Length: 361
Image (cartoon, rainbow, N blue to C red; front, side, top):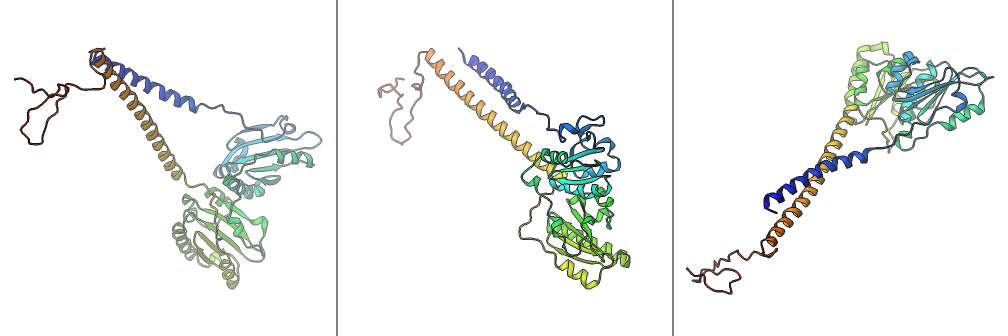
């Protein structure tokens, strides 16, 4: 086999590696997708109006933008068996934060009893409501652990004294905030910076608004914008007391006594351990995905390059040794190499392996 023949063998080997590695990677990504578990028990999935799907349902109407904003994942609706009348609807969200936001909205707009369980919101219009059947619904709801299963932290900062609990509204975006009658322009709030907002009314007083941001810098920027907006509105906003602490902004509006409003906002403090489980903006996830894809491509390229280098070394080294053996030469020595004495002494040049004999001219 000549040198050109060995290079042809190496070329075919490298081509084989280039074809096999992507195929193996493709096989590794092949997974069996199992259908999701139904959100409702069998007793509620046999009626004529049964409906299930992903995202916001077509019949949700004005609720659809809020459900999408809160991260709805899928839904299911079914009729109850006789003698009960009515239906049960379950919305499943990406995390408990979105589920709580949807819950505070739907308990005012939905025509029925609204409850939240983890990442799910259940709406029941059953009359009479069978307790055993609803217990079965609750047991069968998806259970998610980790940060996605944690309830949002911001509503827990609301002082409990005098709080009208049914008035609590929690929003993750402009649609939800406007639907609950938020008093600030959505551009000032900063939902594009991953803000979250909770508002609540207090008995005989006004409204308390709490805003939470990812960083103190973002909170400071939007806190100044909110202060400017309140100064513009003047007395129309009522008694306004605004205070920022780290990533948290607290503000009173409405018919507060000035001393009570000041004492209220000064009593709200960030806890030592703040758990941030609100999804970051889409551009943040996009950058993370780009970085992940780049690192994955680099790793695959390095792996293929290392494998190709090993195969190339084996073929070139082995091919060269085989060619020398076929020529009747030792595979691992180079007897034709000359040794040059550079010591400066006046001695003739000797060829390796000639026993020290001086070459004849």
